[in-house]
Length: 463
Image (cartoon, rainbow, N blue to C red; front, side, top):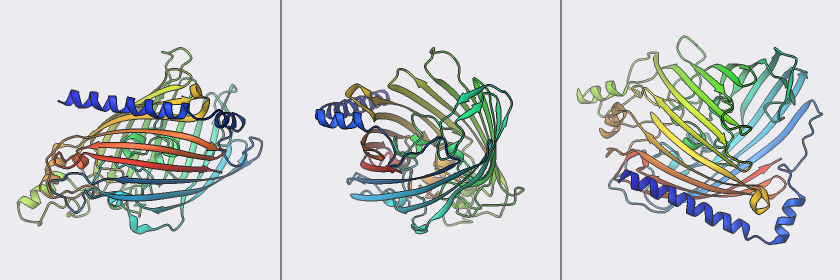
């Protein structure tokens, strides 16, 4: 039965991708010619010769889901009645090159709107732009404020792409890079070119990021930390020390490193196994120290009638340790076709604390550029992901426990399986529009709820 379901999902992705391809190919010749004449990706030009960087983006995502079957629901369930939601994330990027090898960045962001069911009820939530605390509102906040220092270790230079987080266009082949300040760890760790950008690619939390990577972050996804990176011709190593939140999914960070912190390690290789086609292998590990509860202890307290239900936060302050691993693969198959795969695991005894409630995950997907139908800035993509949790985590939810995302009041466990596909179309200059469709089996790991279909539309503006 499992094999049949997998084949059915693969067929679903293929058929929908073919339909979208045919629709794009059928556009009028005048539209194709217009796209040929104007292929810039931003409303305003960003020259490589200036010492400063000034840009902005606005990402608007609208999603809905129809009513779906559910044997029961709880306080943290995805609502099984029809609902829709719109999110809007706007960011102002500022950067300045103080010296040839020293750069500073400051980004201001606003996240408004919300997600379906206030982003509850799914481990692989359908919109990565949603802030997990809807009460925070749309008030602008400081997203990034960091310094970048490049230390050359060789005289040979390579070309580098200029952008809102990197200004230098030529870098030493061998170098050290230091970053310090407020940042987002997924900007630099566990990233790949196919499945990490919600502005142009996938939207699901566990497709865009490794769901089992409980990376240090506040509710908005940012933290303060230091990142050290060594780059060589065919490999790189990164280490980051970052602040953890005081409580699970909390906005306030713990500044006392003896009480909480997160260590992150990534080793990246670029083996020559496909000729000139880019191949990347990234090996990730992290160790979090924070005031985390233990699922087994929370269950014991409930069974011993110390608490009225399993409560993961019902314990005295203590610094616990949670660790995990990840593998991130990326492969270019042709000029237009790329693929990726991710695997992640964490020990699953301590509570999910900063990202989402996933203890084990596997994801794979691909995208295809629209060069074939003369739409070279368009992309079509598809991905499959399967998420799971530990036995202690299962028992906690089955007895009525709640995490910061999940809690149906009971649990008939099954892996949360997700399929996502999209078509992202370049409309004009910095305006992009995308159609997205997701299908979720066993939402919140519950076999008696769902399946759920979630169509969506995204408008992205790049200034």
